[in-house]
Length: 303
Image 1 (cartoon, rainbow, N blue to C red):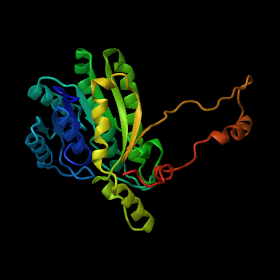
Image 2: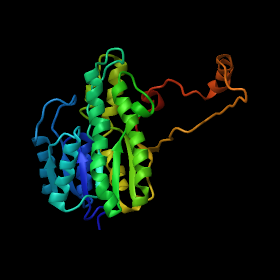
Image 3: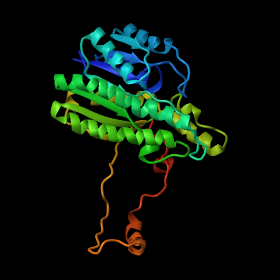
Image 4: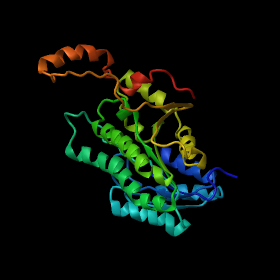
């Protein structure tokens, strides 16, 4: 028997790249899939229903079951429509993969309010909307899987991506809270940070030799490398995995640490500004350096 036989999944942003690979593998593993994709551009503009339709056709051609949905996840009402699509077509819902995203990169001193709001709306609010719409169903049936997408742009840091990084770290908080809130109902929530070539990564500039090498490295990492961990987290065997943050970089999988205290100090008399200047020297060795994800992963991917 396939690992997801008779399961029903929603995958947002499933028309291209990572989302498409996930939808295809879930279907191969036996799940019935709602392929959600607005069909917009990398910056969130435009709409094209064929993007989702083509993935549905591919799944059906391989003997799987799938249906398309074109609603934007930025509205809670639409999230309920997407969930209803699963119920109306397949009778139930077991898995929600919050993958949809856009990029509007800009240095923080140049970023507009619209660039901030649009990225937060798709990534963070969209993930909340889908979680909020599906959670009552999972609660009632006492089972379900949320798999959310974060990024090392937030977990570690990156240049010119304050909006994206903030959204992706917000998703980590959403994932943890969802995992805690839903644990008593046998519902899990986990986050995955992917390294993979996609149309979003295609927006990275290649003006310098360093930038070209960075892009060439990323191009070696296929979206197909991301799908297996998502499919596994959706299985019954992953019931005891929740609230975790994973990272996939080609053929490597990482489990990320999560913020916890690393040093502490107390002062019976309370702290003065001068005292804190002294305390800084004690804490300094444990400060997290200002690094980007490319500095944490400087080596060639295992492909």
